[in-house]
Length: 233
Image: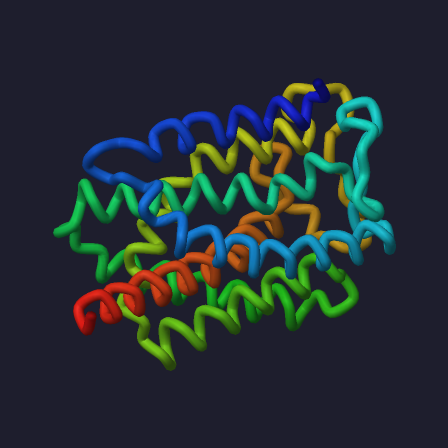
């Protein structure tokens, strides 16, 4: 088993087995969570493949398995299914256990920070592909969903994202070289700011935000639609 493979197993094990918790019963949300994960996951796999082909980032062979899909190791493809699953699980856990938590001010500050920093980073780093794409998409998603559409679930998403920062630092830290001689995933310095959280490029925060926000949005929309259909029936 490759190191990346163990990271994938460690990421999914807890959320999967706890999916059958009586209070959260996350398994009942699979019909809305899984379509959202696969839909957005495919887009991010395509993004990942394109950037890998153009050496924006790559992988150290000694830490990955031999199976590849295109230019991506199998573990990398699974990353876009496993990490979102874990985060949607956390989203539902927080809704179940903290239904009355007030996050208005934190949500407003977070949305403002993501939007402003995303626009600044993208506008002043047009030649850095990863910085430009991740930060600009994060800013545009926030403007569209929080400021224009004013979706009610955004506060719960922010709560989830902040809670997931700790496992994010752990998982991405391992992948970016915090415990190995060489990083599992390496980044081309021409396409990142160079600012890091421990060993993690700052852009990874925006990348994960861009991936998780629409997944939570689609999951919530499908869940609400199914709820309305059930009431109608």
